[in-house]
Length: 570
Image (cartoon, rainbow, N blue to C red; front, side, top):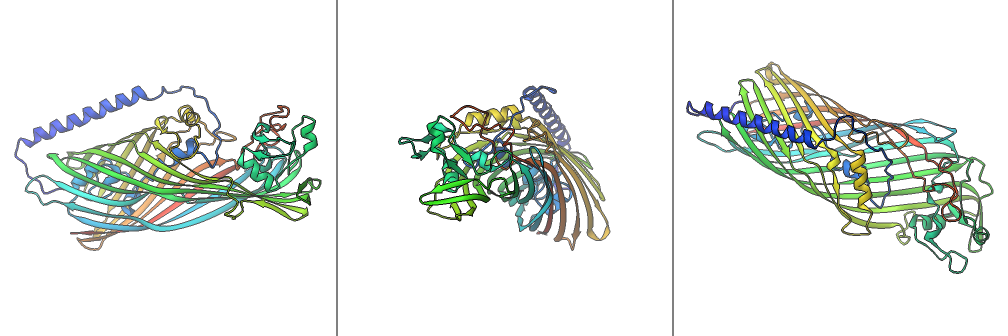
């Protein structure tokens, strides 16, 4: 789209200078990137990062930093491609310099419907079997609201804009079920003896809240005779080598949103420069529930509490979870130049995002149902049983992002392509400012060792028909920056986005846009960790990790995002 701009004949020289300065800047930045990026083929250690609800891990820090390719109905129709410069509010998200190409002032907004479908396959650590289960979760919300004001000028272009938009949505539900031999969440709840107090030969206190909850909830039992003999004195409800049935559900919810402010001006003929400041806020919630049903091998399990004897395991209900409330800030700067009548080139720089995270968590809640004696539980919706609940605050800093894009735009056809560089090994996390310290050095080491740089790609097309109708399509690809990081095998977590859309200009002032974008990704997780590291006498549980290794849940995730947007020009 063209702006109402007039310049004298010597403006072509100025335009040429801006073009070469922009190109030189891009080349220098790319050389800098090449200098700091790891060498291709470099071997890194690939470790397992244990997830806990009371502390963040490297995946949490990464999760808060990821985002959707596009944020409006029109932009997702082309998979978000637009770094070369789009003349609407979506430029605040890709390249603020694109605001300079706006043909008029405008205001708009939209609604979105997200459906997250997950196919989960249960894989036992040893002998056993599992089912393939499917879960689907819908979410409807306001996706964006924005305004662009084009200042009337005698020459050149000056534009201001503000926008609210949703940049990430975490909605997902996973259901799994299977039968396995020996594996049990109870194995992960056994305490280290050094974390238990025995001043009189009986249990006086637990240093580990999870072990205390498991003991109070009947999932583990203490045997004084074994303790007096110098043996490990705790026994899990599920004996090694016995069959159990596991039925689990994981719910993820929340979103990341941006409030963005920006401006762009025409620095030289057909050369736009823009910048913006963005406030990021949102939340992420994780909730897990696991039911373990005895298949007949734990009939001899016995627990004594007070004067009551509980005999024979029927089933165990285990829950944990946390919620992160997130607030952050970043800035974007960009240049967009028209190299010819139909060709534009753009460069965008995004600063690191400085983020504060406030986490409230529940380490565990346990309920054990016995064949005889009844039920023991701790933490199941009882506000007076507060052990294992807490709060921490910490801060993170994401890597900077460097993007470049090209666009070919004629009367009927628009083609656009973007590339974005992000070095995820530069993720940074600080120690907790509220709550107990969580060992930031180990998290930072995991980021340094397991995360690498990536090039994210986006491409889009728009074909304009007569009578104001436009057809759109696009592709985006986000490689997994975690170098082989997986729990049981090397699941590649690359993300592929396919999109399409329609636009209809009702008249010169009003346009309706419909967009659809599908995200596909493979993933895996383990519902609990094995705390034992082998037979270490009476200090740690004498369990072989191969016996109590957790199952792996393989996931095929498909998210479909639908957006309806309206734009008014004035």
